[in-house]
Image (cartoon, rainbow, N blue to C red; front, side, top):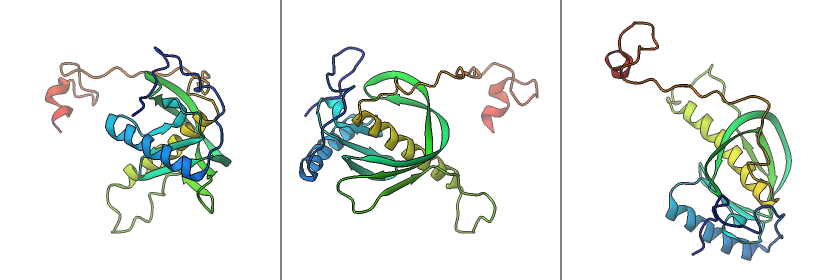
Length: 197
């Protein structure tokens, strides 16, 4: 089985190359291997063929459900959103990017287009059948939309390094320690106040 090429340590000749189109059968075979690699590693949500050295326009995403993208083309995208992304090809490197909440994608193996939406569902009018998982579902939908865009970028030779948004510096919040004053303003130590709530 192939492995993901760490671009910080190894040369990957196809990471910045627009990949060749493939047949559906070839794409499905490569997708199967990509899913096996993700399953074995257990640390990724998506993978493109060039990340393991294949020159083939195939990617997989597994956020809400397994998705295969063979020769995908983004037909439309809208509602720009800032996002902080990582990539298996650039381990431990996070990049602030700009993506889109909504994206319409056409793939070789699907008859119609795929629509991915990270738009939050409205809070008002919540039905009794809706649980507290609504917020989690909204985040998963946005994550899936971002992952699809990220993997399609790979197939056109773009990486998160090409997408870096340098317009605003990332503000890193200091982690509250157990003995620091609690953020609630009580003047108690964090470990004796909010950490136990």
